[in-house]
Length: 342
Image 1: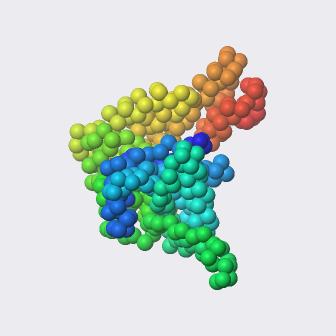
Image 2: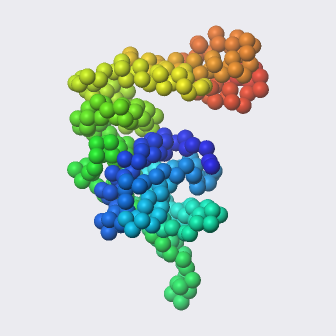
């Protein structure tokens, strides 16, 4: 099983579509009717296995759902997220490799081969141009066509949907709107337009969790919305209703306490929300990194490592702090950490 994906687009997609209710809502709304009618969406079950190559894990996020057909037979829905802003011509071949691995696992467990519905969700700005079937990737004379295996994947191309055409439950609609506009200059405007949808979410426990995921994604995965604009969205979301920003921040802090070396980063982000995203995200991230570095220095080098804190705390550049934090994973001596910022 591969390590979790680290790309912010992949991470956001995987966190959201790991929710059974979101995936069920998406597939029931967008799969072709003749296919959707065959699936019992109440039986959707997320597989814990991943079939992504190590070389591809920073570009793709695979989600495999097992679903029962209305006839009672098992099937698989395989969801591959393509986060690039251009069409990948090798997608059909890559998906085939993953499908073969799924079938290999079935055979190893003495199970019959079940049908797989490969789904590609694409949110680049330009229309998807890559071949949607395997045979179109193979150049062969007509007489040899019978020797070429073929299948096609189902493509969900957000560039072909107007905002009004996006349907489904609130969480899924917000996700699709954000993915569609995350590379576009109108992202800040769209976020203000969906404030009413976000207000619907913050009154629910799962909605608050989703809002956390969404804010982290927007703060890390795009340069199309500023901290000030994101702050304006948050202020409008919490300007009505019984949920307050402090209560949300307290919830995030509690989660942060349970996340090991990332504790400081989590707490810093929460403090950033309490202070307001306009200044808090930057300041909170810096504070979080410092707290994480302090903990890492102590765990790796004890008192000798903690002697570097006075110098490290003078560093205001978040990028350097992040490099220091990552460097702690491999550094053998405190001097190696010093060389990063000297």
